[in-house]
Length: 166
Image (cartoon, rainbow, N blue to C red):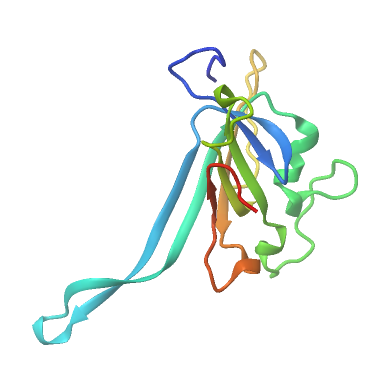
């Protein structure tokens, strides 16, 4: 966990569906192209290029200073009545139906949203793993899979870097 006043470490607020869940100091946002090789059949299937087939996006965070009431908003597929932890009711269903906006906002930027990272549709696919030794605050690692917003197809909009427009 980072000291929020340490100028060498950037601390972010972490929000799901506009609910502040906690703080992170080392978010890992990965957006990767999905490529299909273009091969030249006359020359032993030599790869001569690639076709872009899509993108794959993930976000990995280690949460601390967690607001437990909002934590379960990051795991909507896992909650039941009260604080029960349940298996998803829709086995075989589309996990996209649980996807909501995920936002990372640098604490040192105050109200300035120019360095925010917002992903339009994200869902926690890494489960819940809470570890603690009883001597300090728990750190909760979480992994999210991000999807293009289906409401904006045929454009593949994953989210925004900077303030959300519109």
